[in-house]
Structures are given as structure tokens and as C-alpha cells.
Image 1: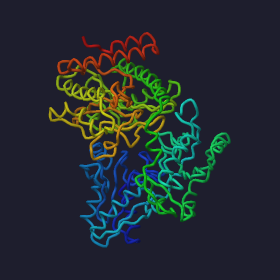
Image 2 (image 1 turned 90 degrees about the vertical axis):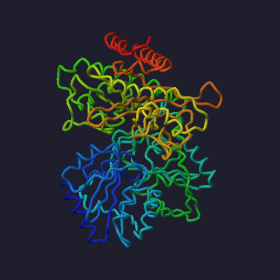
Image 3 (image 1 turned 135 degrees about the vertical axis):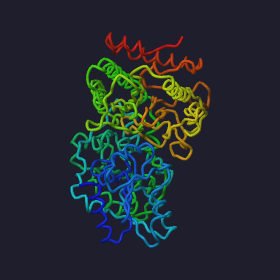
Image 4 (image 1 turned 120 degrees about the vertical axis):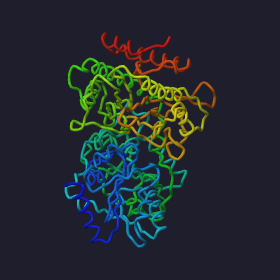
Length: 590
């Protein structure tokens, strides 16, 4: 069924129910970045496969609101259908709601699936529409027309066992109960899948790229219930959970249990992550607070950071093998972007503890590299030839941590403009990597460090500079990161142990994209009250793209130290040929 047929089928349902518009976000009941197949409503109705965007359908128009990361991708995937692209200028503003306010009339009804929107976002939308006399209701219309919706994922639950977790399950539950006690809460509802995986030290395969288990949890001051399909647990896992007082109940039973709570009890929720359907199901006094697990899991323990450092050696070794493979085979056989993505995954799979890729590899040749979240597949994939620039953004999941790295390489002699652009990005990357900042600083205060050299030439990039990264969890983890002042990522104070990406870039449409990304860990500097970053990713920068003339002495010294560290840590794990290749790539400035 084309998106035109699906939109028309939805409009028939809207007419019967007297509904003027339907909002279809990229979301699931857990507000996940990557929904499981059964919850990909927006992708199903539109055909747009990007990881962010909102579809709105009225009786006369249908649109996809997507930000600049997806302009080119969305235009291609929507071509010829009933849904047109609305280019979002501010990805943090609900421009689709503003459009509805200007399009609909007073008395009209707009609906959204209450499981697919957080309580705080629902309240924001409701208030904006109410100004125009438009009401917002929670109704699931997509299920009426999506008759072959996939079933809930049924992958097994695995215990995430020592020595890898930094804390025991009982310690994490104690931490949550301490936060509850501070708020005088009797219960805390947990719905974010990575919060639950972290708290209960479980991992699964229910969501692509993220080792998560579809589940909810209800933590009481005396008891705790984990809601998931009981068949996913073996006897060993069930027994281990029971030791810590964890009762297991069926996934969908949480709604009835929330309905049955004693009305005199106090329930702590985070309205920005709890979906509206569950929020409305709670019988009791609701108090709002930050989810304790969301804050705590962002600060990795010393043990977890040690495991992450070891994992970065494995990841770096795999990348050395992959990039040398590309150099050896380029121009001698047909290599597409998708093929090289698979080659990287193959070499990662040979490393101990590897569990899969942490996201769809972005392998962008020439102009495709300018599409920020481009993902090739075997149907849409350019051939990589020995000319131009190639951007590779990829990551792996390992028992010892999650990796995310981007390198941009020249496949032929670069021109002076390409070298200047690359080096301006590199200078920003180094400035952020070298930053020393006072305790209490947030990402928005550091974001300019990565952009300053581009700005001096009238250049910029439209994505954040860094995101939090989970520990064998989501490659994108909140609330911390490095971004603009208007974002939670930018407003959150940085703490020692937080793991963040450092990834400035530059994108010239139809020409090339440049991004340089390493993972950094927030640590304490040698000055009391000040923090710094430790770069833990291990892979050299492309010496052919560096314009030495615009680097200062401090930047050259930083590259020399980094390249020396890369060689010293990776070469003992390599054979003679690959160690020699790495030595050549780890260029040192005189």
C-alpha cells in the first residue's frame, strides 16, 4: 500500500469519527529514539525512514515535518506520494502544531495516540491548540488501518552480569528509593527502556541497535514490579531478579495496576518521558520529578570507564583493519557505501564482547556525506571510487561499552578548499577536546568552542556538537551533551564520569560532508573545581586533509600526543602489516 492509499484510508476513518487532523509522531510507549517495528507508525504511513520527524494528516493536506538532517532523504523517500515535506527551521519548536493552529478552525478536533506522546508534550500541544479553540484528544487511529501491525518483540532477556555493570541491581534500586523518599513518594513509574535496562541490569534484542527489553517498571518503597513478557525470562534470570525482590508481571498489566493503586498513595513520574496513556491511568497523587535512573546512568563508574577504555582499543583495531581493507581494495573491485558499512561490522564482529552495531552506519561518498543522517542500503548506495571525500560515522555495542566515531578521509589528492574546511572542523574538535571548565558548566557554554573557527569563515553546522553515550546501552543518551542553550542537552551540567561525543562538522550540499567525532569522558582536571575531557576513541585523523599552515603549535602538539597514543595502544594488537599501516597514518608534526 502506497502512502497515498494509507493517507486516504486514514481520512475515511477521520470522516466517520469527526476528526479534523491526526498527529503521527516518531515515538513508542517508551518515548524511544528507535521504536521497535510494531510502533513505527510514522514510517509505516509515510515511507520516510529517518529517525526523527512528525506526520500530520488533515482532510486536505498531509505533511512530514523534518529538520535539516533529513531534508534530502525525506524529499527522496516522499517523492510521488500524498505527503509533502515541511522543512523544520527549529527542530526544538513544534512547527507542525503552529501549522495546525493556522490551518484548522475553532471547534475542530485533533487526535494523537496517547501511548506515543509524553505527558509534558501533550500538555504543550493541548495548550497551543486551545488558544485557537481546537481540542486535542488521545485516540489510536493508525491501528484501525494498519491491520498487519507486527507483534511485540519477543527476544530473550539477558542478565548483564559482573564484571561489567558498575553497580549491582540492589544498589540501583536503593538509589531510586532514596530519590523517592526525598520527594515523599510511595511509587515511581519507569517507562524509558534504557533506564529500566540500566536499573535492573538486563539487556535484550527488542530494539534494533539498542540492547533493550520492552518493559515498564513500578518501584515501590517496599516492592518492585517489572512488566515484560514472562516467557522472555529463563529460570536463572527470574531467580536472580527475585533475589532482589523484583516481581515479574505481563507487559500490558501495568495499566490495570496503576488503575488499582490506593488513591492516597503518591506516585513520582517524569512527565517528559512517561506517555500520556499511562499518566492518565494512575490512581493516586502524582508528583513530577526527574527520573532518578536517567540522571544516575549518565555518570559512569570508574570500573565502567576502565571497561570503555579497553573497548575503544578493540574498536580501534577493527577500524584499522577496515580502513586498510578499503585502501587495499579501492579501485580494484566494486565497493559500495553499503558494502563498506558491512566490512566495518565484520571486523568489529571479530572482537571479543562485540554485540552488534550501535546504529546504522553512515557511509557517505562525496555529496552523500553532506546528508547528515544518510544511511546507504544495497538498493540505494553509491560506488566508492578513488576520488573525492568519504565520510564514515559508525559505532559498535560491546559488553564493555558503546562506541561512536566519525572519520572523514580523502580518496584522492584533496584541493585546498577541502583541506581548509577539514582543518577548520579539526581545530574546533581539538578546542573542545582541550577544554578546561569550572564545575557546574553545561554543554551550551562549551558548544561555541567547536564552532568558532567555522564561524570566522561564515560557516556552521546545524546539529548539536555532542550527545551523551550509554554504557552498552543507547548510543544517544540524555540528558547531558553539548548543544545550543535552548536544549536540555545544552542546559544540563556536566559531571565527572559522563561520556559524550565531540563531533563538529561541515556539509556542502551535493559536494561533500566533513565530520570528526571522538568519544570523550568528563574528568577532574588538576585544578580544584575544574573539569576536563579525556578522549578515549582511538583512530588517526586523515593527514592528507590537514592544512598544517592554519594549525597553531598547541594544536599540532595535541595531534602528536593523540596519534602517539593511538599507535601505542593499538599497534600491540595488530599484525606487522597493519601496524606499519597505522604508523604511516599516525602522522606527527615536526
